[in-house]
Length: 209
Image 1 (cartoon, rainbow, N blue to C red):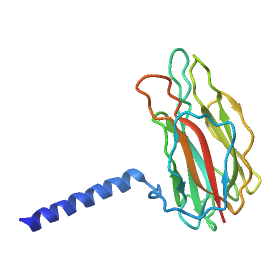
Image 2: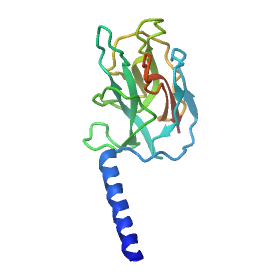
Image 3: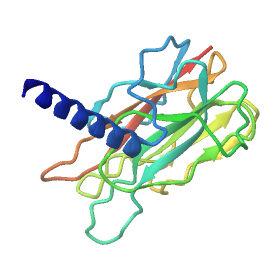
Image 4: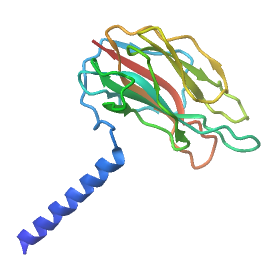
């Protein structure tokens, strides 16, 4: 009897693991801490919410593309949140970004609203600097905090996210030391029971050799 119960628990655990893998797709498991050589920050992020755990690309890979979780703006009395999440899409040094197969993606905490946009890839190289579009506090108006992001690639290209247009672009972060971006950490305001939701407020990127 005990052996039967043990087998059943093992089977249920295996089924649960399979379901988790299918749901996660190519997302990396919660990342193991990775050595980084620089931390990139911008100064125009908002202060609502708290910083989530930092997440890293698997060792030997770097971020060559990104996608965003965005709630499209609605007008009237609707509570908009704009940018809710950022994914870094990671490839190995020798992977072609034009290939149909890519390694993995990582994301820090994300907000509760919106849909994921299509991936924007560097034509060559890796992500090396970023800039946030942020709406400052609106007082009694609707706050959205971060609205969009754009990145520089080590190959010289600029990638603009498919976010929304509220707020203003701040200054660029410093450029990466090392090969390129390899990790991310986001500041997220959790869903409020009452009040003005803002979701993603700020982001930090990590760079690795």
